[in-house]
Length: 406
Image (cartoon, rainbow, N blue to C red; front, side, top):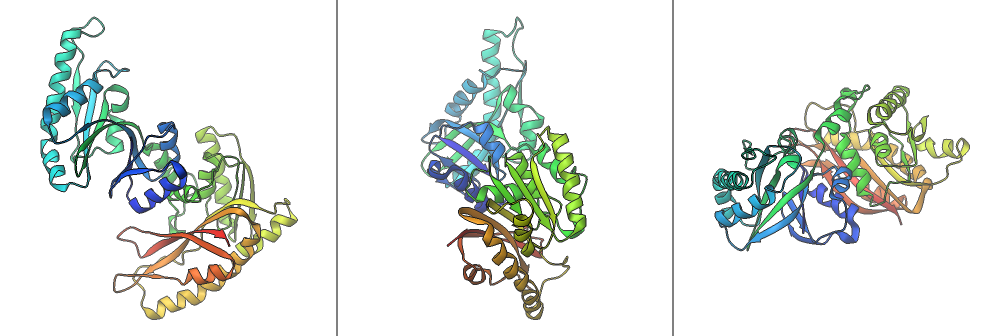
């Protein structure tokens, strides 16, 4: 079996996983932090690289019917003892709840004891066998402040190359023990978020992880596809699409500065990540006019993917009341109507659109979600799915719609 450790928005992470795996998504266990599926014939490294909402991925190596520290230590030690790469064996342990909170808490308390037991076995094994002519192979047990190791701890301690990270997945009737094969490349994500040259936090920034998740949510293989972002801003969606292998990228924005920022960021991306420069067409245009300009200019008449974040409104410093919410709706809905009525002419029957619209925190702590479903359905779209993406401290959420043509 294969396990996936979910990111900070588990509902969206699961939706992304389903969209990318398609019929291969055959879940065995699902919790708020982990999904375990039946075995698949895929490179887990490549799958982890594509998925933005998954922190770690690995394979289940064994099973305990009930908690037994000795049996668990034997299994982990046997797996870690075969580690190659570095002279020192460095290993770590993580515990995740998959339906038995009581046993999970027990394992969390016993985790360091298990780690020391594994370390003891590894030292004994390599003292007997020797390593490279030496008396034994040094062993290090890596632990963090929490009973779950972050991808940063796994990476900075070189666990995957020198010993391994081993996870204990505590189910209702058994405990699965797995070995992590790939982790999220947090350095690359941080570089694309904070290292790009044109970054305007004041106008709102779509996180690169969310941009990639939105592309994946379409359920269409981006390799070789034509993708349009008609509210491209500084080019976050286009950057992720380029890394994912889209053959042609089209971006438009009403702001001249946004298009200049997109060009600057795309040039940086090509140089920083060693990409072949993608075919890209950038237009200074309102979204509603973009289809006409494309047909008159490049001759593009259809696209495979439309992935975008619309204008979310001006920065907010307080929650909205009823009057403000009605005003925002009256200002934004006509823009969305005109834009997506026009953009529908570029979609094929097989195309998908994934769009992040705004939703506003109200004074009673709820979210004011715009009446988008009837609007979009009247324009000829079918709402395939809908997710709300936000952090607890945010006043504006992203209301993400996955759309097809009716």
